[in-house]
Length: 231
Image 1 (cartoon, one colour):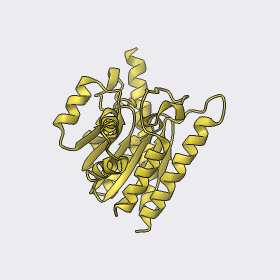
Image 2 (image 1 turned 135 degrees about the vertical axis):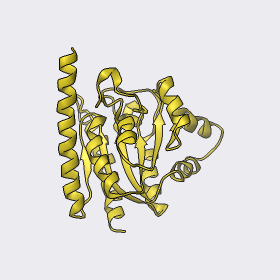
Image 3 (image 1 turned 60 degrees about the horizontal axis):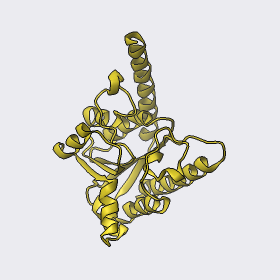
């Protein structure tokens, strides 16, 4: 088991180095990069490259999970550890999380103790709406935590699972499609630049539904990044 774990960690390290190098190459040509992949750990290399290029970078992290576990079950590059890895290996100024609803006590404490992290749990949003608050006001509060240069890391399971039933770790609750796309548009309207993004954990099911939703989120991200790099 230990040998297999070491091998997996080494192979993942090589993949992340490769994606980081390729992202750096594209950024050096003044191109933007949107990573579309499998599990959320695929974002590590691209985010590292973006953090190097943009010293004032913040991450808007949409997800059902906080992904702040430290080397989950010994797996250094686990999808459950991606945001811990980002905070430990980059100079990202702020991690702003939305949709989080499946989280460990240790991760909750990390969000409370680390000033670089602003986490808006899914229950915070639901309580706000049930108390008569508007989604627009909540989104503005989220956006206020972001720096000028924003990278969006979008795990599809941040959405309500009816929109992504085949994803690997669906969790009840989450954002509606319109809430997610409205937030992306609102970031752009705020004057901030979305300079890069990823869309991960989209898993096709027996029909086209998961891919349909994923493609529409990808379109929204692509448009926002295009607007960002033109500024």
